[in-house]
Image (tube, rainbow, N blue to C red):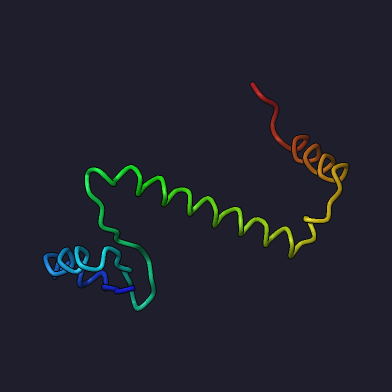
Length: 97
């Protein structure tokens, strides 16, 4: 995937838009590290593109939670243990108004 720097985005915007039209996706970098994605869309594909991006983010979040559970042993908790954890957290919450 092609990348551009924040500086290029600021100073060479016309060239960036041309590159985006050609490659469809660009990684924006700051100090050599990726910080954002630019993705070409049209009026007809905007909503579908946003939905796909949100779905991908949700899948990444679920995978991260599963990995954390595996690393901490939470994936081996029984239903009784899970319910006890939930109840303990609820007791620590402030009462609802």
